Length: 208
Image (tube, rainbow, N blue to C red; front, side):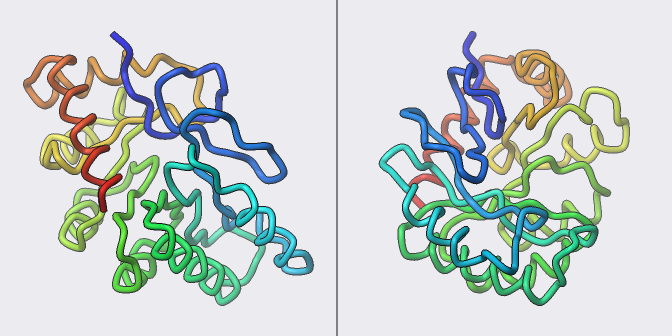
């Protein structure tokens, strides 16, 4: 079965959303485009912004990765200003937002009020309480490789509603089918049923 990979970095992946890197040319299949908090160059931010705006094509599925990262070299105010600018762009073009967040979840939640389109936390691997707070603020959660071995995260996933879940490989080297199999087992459904549910979730976020 061809399982959907919500966030990946390999152009050879047929069914999913490719994360376009800065300076790359958009492919002719679904991709996301954004300015990652660790990639912000304050001296050339307008060039980065021009690249972002110029490369939104019909195949652009989402804006991102964008967000906040406590380990990024760029100061938090600059990160926040650019995050908000990308949120406003997503509002304008009616695209979902794929969020990168490191130790700034409650700050990211505070930005939710500015966003019209859905916001999806990619690579979620934190505690159940953070998941609950994100879900209560209408975020989606995309889970990756950590679900295969992290027992605490498995419990969090079991409590996450199916209509709020996506699955991804990110830049890890493993099979998305393996992840679907594990999550299907944890949720007590078939991999095929899980794939159908995620297809429904995609339509939901696509339509805002």
